[in-house]
Image 1 (cartoon, rainbow, N blue to C red):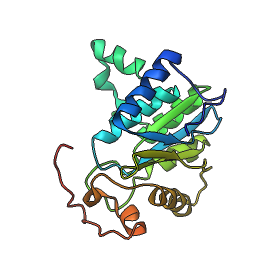
Image 2 (image 1 turned 135 degrees about the vertical axis):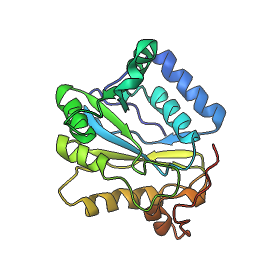
Image 3 (image 1 turned 90 degrees about the horizontal axis):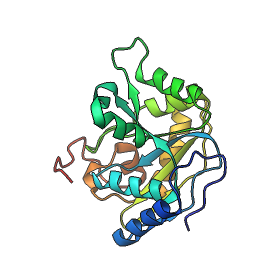
Length: 216
């Protein structure tokens, strides 16, 4: 069952937009189990990422829950009317030429806002990566905010939210817990594109980065 948002979570939309999001999910046959913790700031990750459909499902879930979530996008994409739309969608510009890297700029975004949810894909690609990217953990640890994993199950058409994890200096232990949760609560649309940590935990063969490169 989809859990309602707590009062401290950054929110957007209204009853109409949330109802529309739920309608879209129903039409696609998808369900949500649980929800995010009642916290004003968090890094929200989704995995496994094996298809472009993941983004469509994530957007519908965010609308249905009414979460105001942000993504970090290069600043050159914010020119003109497109920038207005991106900001409305919650995107935050990143200056890749800045002395500050993307991680530091992301930490600044948390520090500059009383409420901020950052949405990231820890695998970074749909092409069977050997490992998860470390950036999401560095951001959460640097900002002192919890990480919440959303596991995508294509077999059951179900997305579940795991318990919040407060990151520590032990990257391997922290990320291992997140990967354990995702592996136990997910099934991919394209198994050949699974990241090695999830493939190993699910007892599936890893394609070694040779997953299909089709558009889906």
